[in-house]
Image 1 (cartoon, rainbow, N blue to C red):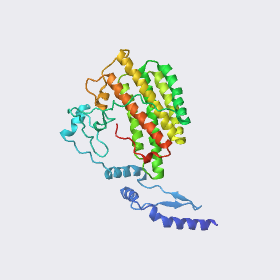
Image 2: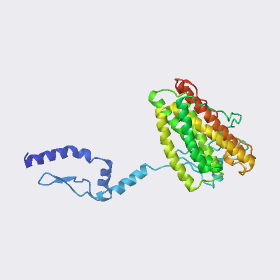
Image 3: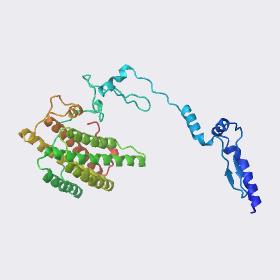
Image 4: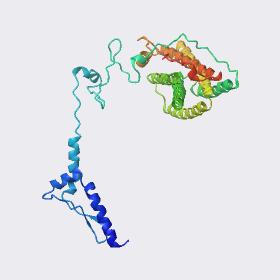
Length: 348
């Protein structure tokens, strides 16, 4: 193609697109705001047919001009002032009120006696009274190969922890809860994805397993109010949790009934561990300190409760988790799916 033909095609293209590319309000404002510039030459052409931009009067400051326009158009109104009654929660927190993006103030939650509710991790309607009458000596006999494999897996895991912690029940309990809170979350997550993939209900098992995980976490939060782990115990938890999460995740994918059976036996050992904790409390080997406030509110304990009362209700929770996981395994061992039997939800 000749040079003259190239130049003609370039002029034709620019002539067709000039009106579209340079007809915005921004450039109009800039053109009219420039001193004595009512018409802005857009471009010139070199002898080689290449477009060359021409300096535009006032163009250097066009970004400042447009930003001012945007600021004026997108001015955000200040949130409305709160009434005096809305500052009750602010007074309790040092006079500062945090308002969400939508201008919705958090609800004022109080106890039955009128005192303010101090916990953000759970609400009064999520508290409960533990069933301490549950059988804490129940044991599932390992008759099949799967049951024996699950039982001895837990025994192999148990003995190193007993040798490491010995009679330090508080540290043992904290490590135990960091592990016990994993299976419910993993099982609930996988059942959640399964329900989405198959477009079907779960029979309440997603909620039951997630409640179990949250309950185990609340056990840990309670013990943290009494004692703090050492740095090497934190490192141990970091390593054990990483290994156990991945191992249990794979086990649940391969065989959910085996995974639930392992958790059932793990909860049995938790019940036994808390029973030994109670024995040492009764003997005076461990100080029976007053119960922390979080435990009194979470389990609806009397105000004068002690550590023994806290360990008693936690043991009851572990016994409930034991029965739930053995029940889930039994359902699948008999050839059924969990969704066919309603989950025992509502305990927590």
